[in-house]
Length: 131
View 1: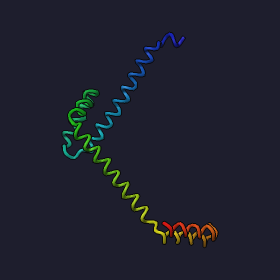
View 2: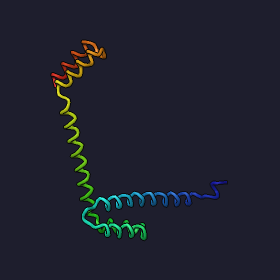
View 3: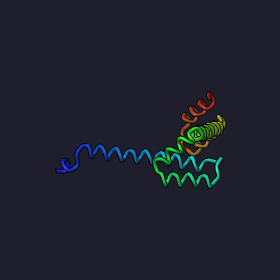
View 4: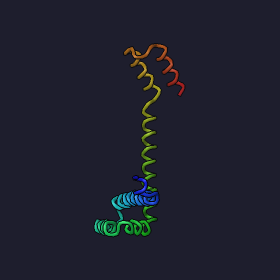
């Protein structure tokens, strides 16, 4: 009975509208995020863009993407490079913090506490010295 009151084309149309709404929300978040990250425009210009996005929901997003596509791409790429650089610095800092002497000292502490036995201590010591 429910299948006859809600035909297949109606289901397709509902799914199409739902996915178009989700895509619009995603684009809206990208645009608003880019607007608030920008340092090259004033607060008034940001407010004007937000008003355009509110008054003309789909067209406002499309207008922003057409007008600011190059700047949006450059800002996104710069943000990704900065995040990658910060991650690389973190990895280098973390890897450098653990020298062989630190590893042996930690292993000795574990041996003294009884957490590991002498064979495990020697194994850790050999690995630390080999690296």
